[in-house]
Amino acid sequence: MASQQTRPARGMRDFLPDDVRRRDYVIGVIAGVYRRYGFEPLESPALENIETLTGKYGEEGNKLIFKVLRRGEHESSGETDLALRYDLTVPLARVVAEYRGKLPKFFKRYQIQPVWRADRPARGRFREFYQCDVDSIGSRSMVVETELCAAVSEVLQTLGFEDFTIQLNHRDLLTALLVGVGIDPALHATALVAVDKLDKVGVPGVTTELVERGVSERSATALLDAFENPGRLDQLVGASELGGHAAAQIAEILTLADATPARGRIKFVPRLARGLSYYTGAIMEVAVPDLAGSLGGGGRYDGLIGMFLGEEVPACGFSLGLERILVVMGERNMFPASVQQASADVLVTLFDAATVPEALRLAAELRREGVRVEVYPEPDKLGKQMKYAAAKAIPFAAVLGGDEIARGEVTIKNLLTSDQQSVPRASVSASLRKGSSA
Image (cartoon, one colour):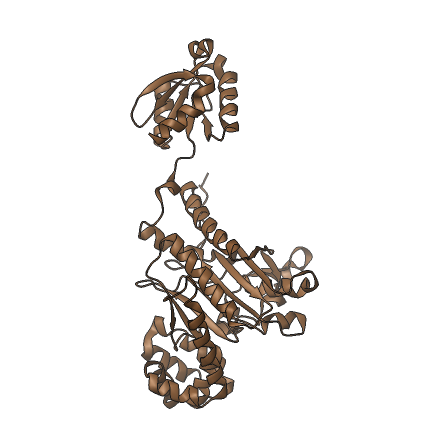
């Protein structure tokens, strides 16, 4: 019989125990920081109605939505009615519109769940990946952007990142620049998609793409020059009321950030575009040296919820990419040793069939006292059981043979030092704690 293909689908991954422990550690840090900032947890379904997602992400994003065929008698039609969520922001907008009357005036939520994109897999880029979102709904104040940047800064610093920068720009400032260099408003959205690729393809590549998208070569050159020429940038922005308002908001965020953990971390980067079409104000992105792409990003999207609710609701959010963070932390050996701890504190061995019930009772007693216990599943030679425990980095083994049971004792072996001692059964957990701290 031919063997089945055992690899996961391209862009998808299996997570073995060590992988899950690292992920749990990072997620725990992120959620812990967000809770300290007053954000509440939220979850939404993996599947959304297709109309919920389409038309929200711009031309590039719409191509990457994983669509789901109709089922049952409609399967042969080739039509779609559902889709796997592309991000956590649009589902949040739907949730706020659905439950607006039940939510507080200022709704602050964090959400850590997988999303799916029909993208081409690459290093650090997958078709299924987790996003760690934090969003604030209901206020136009720049305190919102500042607090989001502060929370993200605290997360990254807690994880051990010291060389990151939060790049900051504003969609209205970009609009002022596009108008200032003579780009037709009808081409603004497509132009920003090209500008968003500056870090990937460079100035020549973006110039070519802008021209291909209908922007004149003169306007394309003037726009890209402005990104590198502060004097020209100020001239173009200052000539526009919209640009001046955006510059003032950027300045306010930078000033307020000095009172937070984001102090010295935020940098104004006028070429930052972020390709998603729903952004309406400040936009942010986390940059780390020598990393292709960012660790996360976000921005203000005051119009998105209105697509569902029929009225504009202020909103701003930030999303950290769990997968990118894990890749970088792994490459830099940033995980604490405790994250790679053994699956159990002690292996309870099985001496023979007659001792199995008493071994299980010992395991239950230790677990009630907070000890992590693995029971070897079948009686075997003690040498094999010790070898098994050592291979799993379990530091101790507990032997409960007939003699130990008769004496009311347990033999504890330290698998790191090979020392062993018999201790009263009631003292086993204390002995393990003492041994692990020695």
